[in-house]
Image 1 (cartoon, one colour):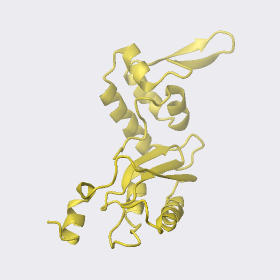
Image 2 (cartoon, rainbow, N blue to C red):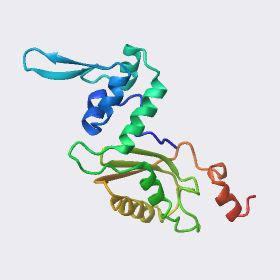
Image 3 (cartoon, rainbow, N blue to C red):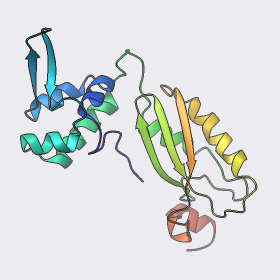
Length: 183
């Protein structure tokens, strides 16, 4: 499961807009600001649609360490408008309160949560099902969406059903394996 809010393909300008505290991290890694003579406005280099990966390459920065530091700053930060940003831990804890309608375990322990992406105040979750034929899938998706909307800082939620890779018993947590008698 992905735990980073900011990834290698995130756009530098967008990260700076959503997570103002990231500017300090960028400066520490050598990213610079240049004044545009025409309008006296500072602009980060790289600018435009440059990715974190491209910026790291440009400045010779360790990409993985830069991403770790940016994600720490984002987790501790606030939205550009001063509002709260959702925290991965809060989203994950909320998902642990969503139980499969047919199996008495939460969707995290069942290994149904394949990915969580936080983008500012938006949360996206990739959710698998144990079977394509489950008629309770719409109920579970609605439950996950409703609960995530109550997480502080969340303004929008998207739950995507994914089928690749197919869910298997190997995705069960140790707790779920014991609870279901597989250990």
